[in-house]
Image (cartoon, rainbow, N blue to C red; front, side, top):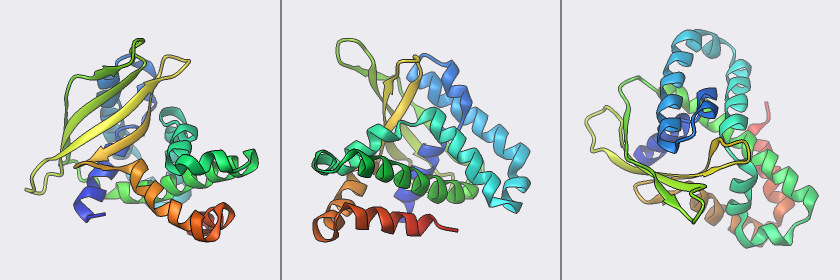
Length: 204
C-alpha cells in the first residue's frame, strides 16, 4: 500500500479514538466529535505517551473497544475462511488482529501534525432500518498533496452507538487488503500459523 494511502488510513482510523463517539446518534456527528476529542487528548498527553508506549497502547485499546467492532472486522477479513475455523481460532484471531491494529496505528498516530483535515459528507444510510451507513469524506494530509477520498462503513449497535467496521481510502479497502494477504497465508500454512505470525509482530 502506498505511503500516502497508509497515512490517510491512519488519519481516518484515528477519528474513532474517542469516547465522544458514544454520545452521538448520527454517524457524521460521531466522526466529527471523535476528531475533536482526539486532538484534545493528544495535546494533553502527548509527552506522556511518547515517554511510555504502554500507556499509548492502553489508551488506544480503550478507544478501539469503544468505537470499533473487531468481531465484525475479523469475520470480514477472513471471509470464507471464517466458517472453516472453530470458535477458539475465531477468538484468537480476533484478539490478535485487534492487538495488531492497536500497536500499528497507535504508534503511527504520532505522525499526526494537526495540519491534517477531513471534510465529511452527509451519511448515506443503507437498508430499511437505517442501521448501516456510509460516510464519504475527503482527507487532506496538509502536505500540499491532493486530498484523498475516504469512505467509512458504520453500523448502529444495540446500544445505539455508531461503530466502524471498515474504511476505504482512494478506493483501497482496509478489510479487503488484509483479506487478500491473509487468505494466501491460510491457504499455504493454515490459520494457526497466521495467528502466530500476527502475535509475533505485537510481542514486546
